[in-house]
Image 1 (cartoon, rainbow, N blue to C red):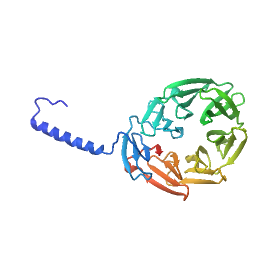
Image 2: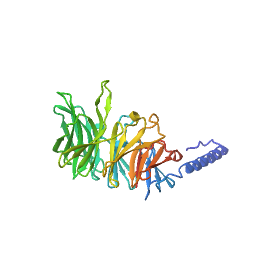
Image 3: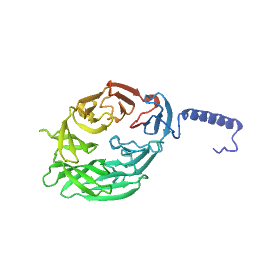
Image 4: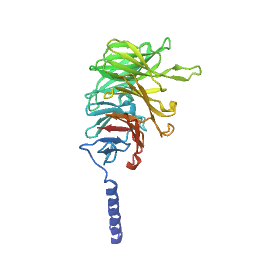
Length: 363
């Protein structure tokens, strides 16, 4: 600040006192700011900060790391390998979507605008990020390095059908892509699996012969578990809920089905420790946020009901797990669910001034 020479000494002293008060206030406000972390147990992403904790009950708050970019991640897009997570962001005010790469050791983030302005399907193997952008006449494939620079770009034109990439998994160093299709001559939908090498050359195509909408999958070894989200329309033209998992063996190419109890399943995860599938169900259609579990040892099913979260006030939570604890992250609350005693613990995040929680790391 430049002081005019004709300012009186008293005014100068008042400004000094005021400045000192401001510095004291700023120091107090920033006392919980940290620049980096050496170790931690949990980290929660808010829009403007990362809250870091040294325990799993959020009692030992280490401080906040300010985020340089205030992008919100798309929960369903996360992929993890080694020390890194990748995801796409939701649209910015300028209608841009970014790819993000998170170093889980030091919680730093790297962003680049997504080629094709999207990453409709994406997955990381720890060395590269593989992603797609979907258009009415083609699918564009992009391979990004660890600096999110494009190293491979392949365009596949549609031929007689519309193709929409849904999700990647990696099995035996091959990419497997779930693709929904629409035959342009018959208007009949279908689902396919494209086996690709990591330069996006198609090695083999598996026709699933399914007219239902299959949108998400997870692999357990060589077996794919694919969620039937929708199963056509009723007489009123409304979409009918899917109610099963398609089980597809990549080796034998045999198909089986597992019926699931709740309506409109949307996403699926695999808990290897407990050999259990976790299926997210659409909240608005069910009137609550619920997750269906399927134990693959005995096919026992259960439904986790997340009580106290209105589907009119909340969006679906981000989900992750460690050992026997399942974590459901809402924008202002964290729900811990113990799968052994089936007890839920709700932790209010507002005391840490977290309002837009959308991603969680549990080390």
